[in-house]
Length: 176
Image 1 (cartoon, helix red, strand yellow):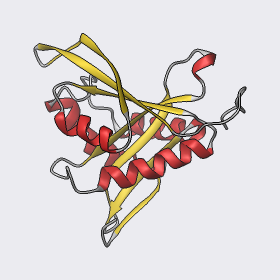
Image 2 (image 1 turned 90 degrees about the horizontal axis):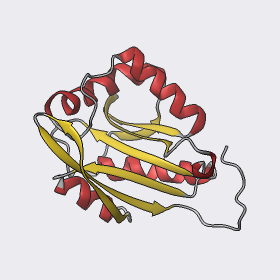
Image 3 (image 1 turned 90 degrees about the vertical axis):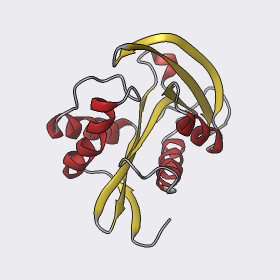
Image 4 (image 1 turned 30 degrees about the vertical axis):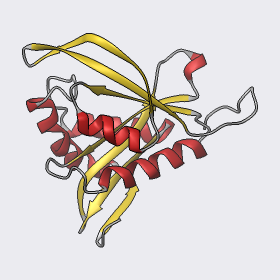
């Protein structure tokens, strides 16, 4: 981590900053399939929900939020409850700054501590930076949904990768 940077649990007070970081991805890219940027109120609800069941971290730089990462349910069916979907977003222009790595390291450790076993990440293609980042973080490609989402006037593929974050005897303890 760079001097002046800190990774910490998010609070609802970070919602405005997280919404501001996310908005350009929603408005100007197909990296996310949302089409309307969430308001700070909606982002606060997302943060609260993630903190209750999974995790949400922010990266602060000189006291200002510069990125975030979170985990949530992979699917709602009971058999998936030990698996999570994870995402990371940094302010535009911060690629290859190390921020994504420190956020994911904190996130994956917390999810493993809470009893989750596997994390999955979806990446809209083309996105060589995200594919390379997830590979460097130990994720393995598991498949691609072809032409699964329509945004910005085009069909987009989504590649999926996963990483085992904890092993153990079966049946696993309930995540907490």
